[in-house]
Length: 285
Image 1 (cartoon, rainbow, N blue to C red):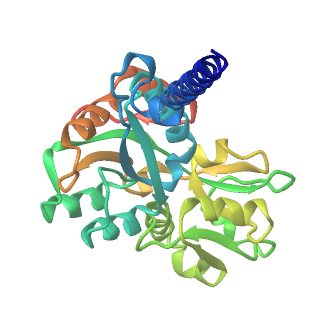
Image 2 (spheres, rainbow, N blue to C red):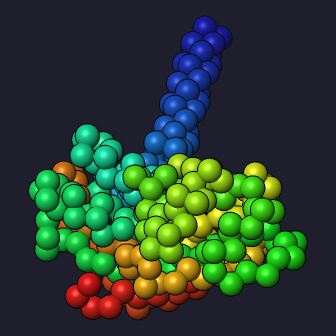
């Protein structure tokens, strides 16, 4: 009888140990199922979570502040889309696209850069449109006490360095050269000119005192507390500063890119751009 009791006792202990191990395994599996891997699969519902599609936008440096705000607005209403920006001089961005650099949309600060890509059939005529307009101004440090009225004032002896974007690649620099040439001042002021890789670098030169004045857009001047507008450049002396947007033909996400392109032309987007000093381009320009 004692041997039978001991045998049954051993069986009972063995069964309890097996049950405990089984319960531990089930608990571990449940915890693992609720962990990060489960979250990737959509959580408790078991439905796969939607993956974000990244759209890469090559955009003129002068659009930096406006597009960063627009990114937040757009991604909130389009959670499956992530916007990434490549900011720079329009001419440099144009060349990157020509050389095969990835881009879904191109936002240029000059029509000529967009036209080059149209001519090379890298952007379709039906997928591009001028959406914004800007103005060229000359800025000086905030504490400057000079009286400024026009470009001729830049010839004053106290002005040692004038920052300007590289005319061949920076639209604001090209516009500045046009305006100074029209006023017969380009050659006069050329010894004072300090060329910059984009309009934001021009602004930085004036902000830091590395230039006494600089040609930037009105929108750039509005973004800085360290400079002030000396004068607005006569708009009749340079090509209108229009900003076209276009879908790059090599995009891997044509429908999503066109959806963003259409959004850039909505009132919601226009209100954001207006906040930063941009004006809508006239229809058909």
